[in-house]
Image (cartoon, rainbow, N blue to C red; front, side, top):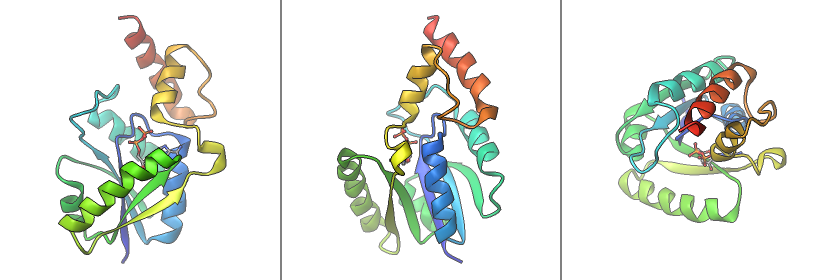
Length: 163
Ligand code: ADP
């Protein structure tokens, strides 16, 4: 069974991420969407909230799972028996950063490869940060996120912008 890991902060998961997940799930037997604990970022949503959003958004696909990890990605991939890490690329700057990560991960775990999928044209502009910014200003989020998440995101963004 070919397992792939799709790692990220997913703060929160967007249609851009979901487009990559759906395409990866067509290529691999199983895709584990792994919310990584990243000390450098200051997330709007807790780890558990982010995993719950991912879980709800991917439950329609039977070969996709949601998880979280607080260890090195290459180690996590080894534990899961994964053959690949999937990354979505929007712009050239994504490639520079991700290529460096891919080389490091390969060095730590030589059996692990990184597969880059280009962002679909309609989601090239979309990022979690843009969604949070739009939410703070009360803009409509229908184009960016699954319906079931929108009220939660709007509420949290309102609380944050009141500080
Ligand atoms: P962000 O960069 O939005 O904060 P993450 O850290 O959660 O997102 O990113 C996880 C992965 O998803 C990365 O490989 C990132 O390049 C990719 N990604 C994020 N948004 C999109 C998008 N709109 N289309 C394709 N890939 C994306």
